[in-house]
Image 1 (cartoon, rainbow, N blue to C red):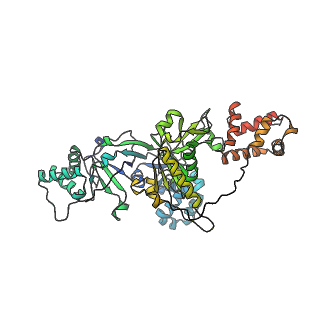
Image 2: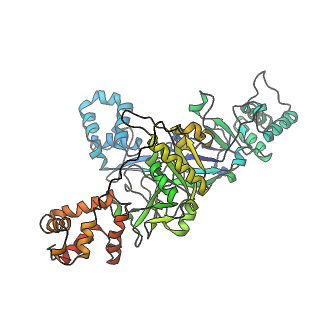
Image 3: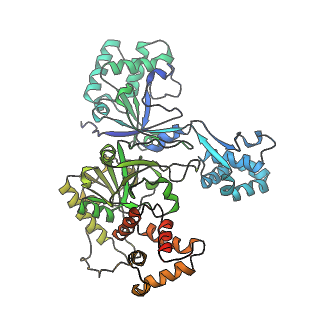
Length: 540
């Protein structure tokens, strides 16, 4: 009978506590909620771990005053609208739309009694949220457990014949040592675990701990059981109970709301992109970087002397890629290798207290590209789900992806294809498919589309810098100079350049603009337009 195959596992742990390593000495001896044995609990599916994370302490404050739950327990000087909104926002981790959902789901009886009051709160939640700060001590850990450790674990839901060889040996020894007997048909892993605990201790609150320690001392480091969603189906993702914390390596701790991101790159980073861009990365073996000049929101995150960046995340289940598009690609990167050659800086893009952290790490560079991309790519996961619709065929995308697969193979980069979105998000290699199953063959002959000349939006801006006489300016540059002189009310023309940079921030054309700005040590697009105005005698 074939044993279950195992792969290296990235798992998740949710906790109200902050720590750098796992330690069972802080655990109580009683079973408590540890229904599936004594040890440290991990989940293969991040949403399961987040359910434990949500048990942490999270609250909302208004003008430094903690908003109590239920909402009517708050002081008289706190407006009722704030009390209700704060309660809902705390449950929703600061997200106004999710808070509205919480109100509709959990405050329905109060709503019926005071429809006008609750109606106002429901309508004005986004504005009320600006007055309320959500705080939290919750922590979400991404953890790695070696594959050889996973392979030696007890399988909670499987019979003795389906257990790994080392587990079978330990259990058969325990059967002889303790004289374990079962009712007919009760031979699953959990039953042996319970009987071992009962044989070692007469105290029910000590039995699970005793069984875990007994198994761990004999080379069984933990156990696996199907999570709640998978249990009804009989297959799917598992939870893990680890008896020995030394096997758990923390890769990342998700930043709680209101706490700054920690400096430095995590060992593993994730870069999300579409397969068209993936093809360019692999064909050229380089990352094309964006410039941070594009929006005012980005300027606080800039690194001096490094105007280009690659956006990555610390978690493969982050907000950037929870709703992937067709033919999405996730590149798993070596964060430590990148940090040795480039400045890596964590970015809380939306700011503290916004309600969620993107967990973004930006890799900054002085140049617009990072060469030798394959040096930093550990593996690539591709979602190939795509449905054609009238007037459009995915054949061109499929051809591009096939070429990307060939280029990736030449570079020695492992690549995995998925049709299932959940498996892609979790990077569950057990559900990866061969190319023949994951990628449909093109149905139509390849079409050669005429190439379109791309507009260089920055040409007139650069012309105003390099040209010294108005008579020699092109028509576009002459029009721009007139706009700067007469129409730049409240920075309208400057914002147009700002938008052009943001929309074309990976273009080689923007590099010429960046070069001029670096030469004059200009920090913002507004500084550049100021330089032009000064040159052409325009009052500022």
